[in-house]
Length: 181
Image (cartoon, rainbow, N blue to C red):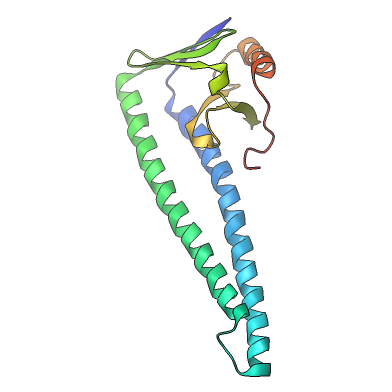
């Protein structure tokens, strides 16, 4: 069994969320780039087809417009989601800062328990999809989203607890190299 406590530290929490945001939206930016390149290629081929056949609205230009529309839609929805989550995180950080909460963690063979004086969360290992490591931060994944995960930085816990937690995670769940596959 591993037990430790982490006092609230605004700088660490903010740093961790910035890393998780960058990692989460990195894949969305990649998708937007792919859709934009596909749109450009289809539009170029559609214009070549137009010069040969005088039909501007051909399947190639329609695919080009569709690709650009999808890229714009992905960008707009990502931007909206990003801002909403960012506002919610600021609210939670301010609440935690005002209450000066310390979170207590307990890892056993059956469950992971998190308590902070206000709430107690108990998760069986079967409810955890895996873990990954980003810039020396252990991220315990509750879903395919990094933003709804537990983070434990090397600078938050003792080195001994960091490596004990890594060993426990290796035995209890899967290491996920790329969570977006």
